[in-house]
Image (cartoon, rainbow, N blue to C red; front, side, top):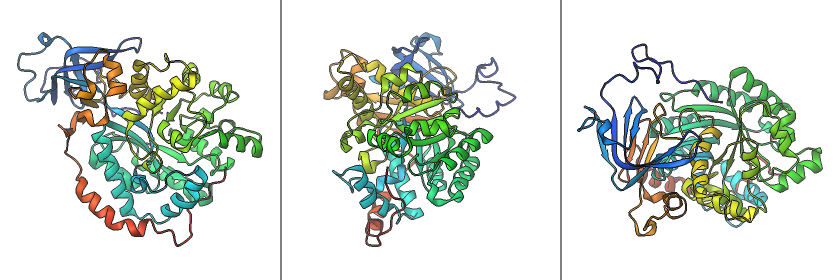
Length: 473
């Protein structure tokens, strides 16, 4: 669900009004870049030698004709000379678990049941608030450096994650995860968090209810979540049909797929973000087609390859239903990184392989998934995802001067298949520069890493034999 924008100031009026367009000092002017834009048919295009003017956290103008501006640019603005760089909408990580960067590389080369039961869920029972904070800080730093300006997080101790997000300057949709094994208290905590943090951090933080999955949350709790979502106007973020084994197990046990279980609980009539969906099968498609809520799917292909899952998210089938498929990384414990740039390239390659057709996904289609579709998947499609007047100024500048990106014959292909997250030079959210020329401005990584490593022996100790949950699909 797209949260409403804050009420416009009476002096400026709505963002499209003449008063809002009145002359005044801009916050930021970016000049000389090549800007990635969407046309009226949502096709990807590029504007050469573009100038982008930002005021009040929004893009005010974007033009390829410098004559449209005063010779020195608007008075009082900060200027970024972006000659030789591409300006594009900030990437969106549509599904992750930021604090899990603390477990990066600790559970490798395992099937998912052993991954959960033997390593991840025992270690997560050790997590303290400070571990959550340090993990969130490191994750936010990694995402800023990789050109991610917005993320959707689904985890525990989310008050801490919200505080770190606000400090970092990033945009996020956050949900406090819960299992039915926690009783009604888990669901109530998820609701309490969502209501307290909705539209905080100057509107950069939106919230969701966050049941974990149909195999850890029972039908009664799923139905109660749907009722709460409708009552409070909240979206829902949930893992569902993560892989084909889960779908097969659900059919054997309940006679319904995970998607059919969500439909029966009323969750497809809420605004819903489904994480993964590689287990979505043919019988699920008409069920999804009947959904009355806004449905989005987050695809994190690197994890599926690592776990050796036989299928990936059915991007083409979902798009034919009008369901946006956004890009994601999942947590770094399974994906090893929060690199959405890599997810963009892998999504294109996995779809070519799955469809046995090199024409799917094209580079421009992959860029569409990485920008506007990802924004829509997390319910922010009216605010972010494209560079256009009135949109929030979430912008990244990408340097394509490196040997691995030259020569440039097809700019879209270069961005998807040659560029890397390390080519992002500058990251901007709401018109605020969070990283300039690769220098982080809002987070101190060395101090985070030092303390995290000091705490690691206690965190990874599994001698206690506890687990936060049992993985049994």
